[in-house]
Length: 315
Image (cartoon, rainbow, N blue to C red; front, side, top):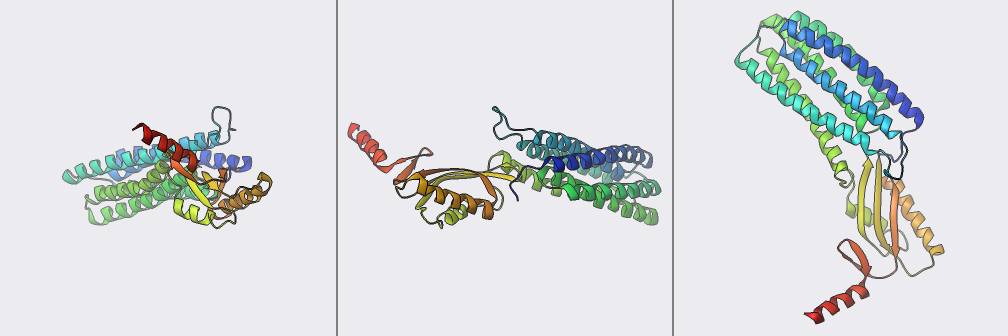
């Protein structure tokens, strides 16, 4: 991941792609739903539901890109970087609900088969493959964060699932077996569920301020200790502001040297964190004494020992 806020040009390009995708998806949702009702195809109706969730996902993505462009202020000092993460989380959660609904409906269809019209299924699904494929390609070209990546994954998944509807329609037409439609719906539901779980886990980790994916605190500490002049690293925290922006804070023990000399150590630390871990937003506090952590706050060992001794005497 790279630490940067998308440029104005990139945001405009992303917004344009998302808006085009939004219109195409809405048109296909209407077509698929009407065709699904006429063809009595649960697979097509589930595709309509899937694409409706994608329409909502794209709508949230447009809003997220807009908020990302807003500058930080006194109330939101980190800006609106979490907007795209929240949008991706809501999108993926909605898709999981859709997948569960499709699975339940498919189970009912297996128990009580319904005759479908495969020719209409095939024609509508062919339109869907072309539309979803085009949108997926457009989104792939601008996918730079969890928000647009989640939208791309949705549309790429839609392209595959819609292609499966074509295969299912052909099989039904050749064999006359109506169970193929609900089984196909179950496969689509499984695809939706699988693609969404990963996004939920990633975005939930960011919202809960977990350590960024691929990083460990010990690895950060070990690399920081290789910088000449760094004696100890503690009270170390790393988290994500957005999917492409990470932050770090820590206490670093160094020798008792003037600030004019310690600035070189700070520069080396920041360069290391930027180059190896793509962390550009750092808060590093220098200390020159041996310290311990107490309630998440570092304090001189001598002061802690004195306090501890005082309490021991009282008891």
